[in-house]
Image (tube, rainbow, N blue to C red; front, side):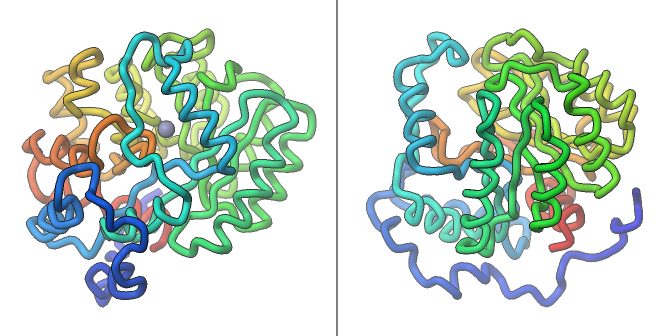
Length: 326
Ligand SMILES: [Zn+2]
């Protein structure tokens, strides 16, 4: 698994290539939700670390009407949100949202999309092919659901160039260890394609959420490159156990350590040395655009953990650059 670790991140990468390629973000010129100069704040964060850009493994892009349904769900406090107040900070059209990420010098990001019922994944995967084609800085993303034929469409997505998958155990309300998924997991493990999996019991518990079902998947597929979304919140320590046991398991930072999350699912301070030690397997994730605070707050939340610049550089860029050969 260490085969790619020695490769340095592209040394001659121009700083913030997206900014120079695309010019000022069109449509992002309205006052930034994060304050008057959020792009400047993100730039100063990068400059403190000497990073050419950021890589964000957990951003949501999906067909507009699906995304609008997701936003309505947050607005109306659907059951997975509970009574949390969750205003969507970046409620904009698709082109404006990609422009915002480029303005933040996010040099690669994902299109986390996921079905909530059978028969929906192939349609989402077809959309994702088009999105990846028109969005070269997006890592081509695909998804899956436990249903007959899943291994065939997962194989087809891999053939079509998918570089990362998303599995949402909570929204899909399925057991990731369901036998129907077994071949698909095997195929993804074999291909070394990472799968961002929302499997923790946050924001609210779900029937198949929690470390147990994910542990069963890994027991059968120990080389599967699972990226545990949200650091596994709120079962942070149980998911750290899995990451320590399986060397291909990684964690994304999505919403973890922020003021918002610390209020109701605080990360245990005693576990900080463990994420410091796993510094080569923690990846920046944000949940953009569906976040109830400015993007830069996620970066500052990581910075204030005080785990050192080397750790931050690895998390915000280098680990993902190595994983995705960027
Ligand atoms: Zn998400």
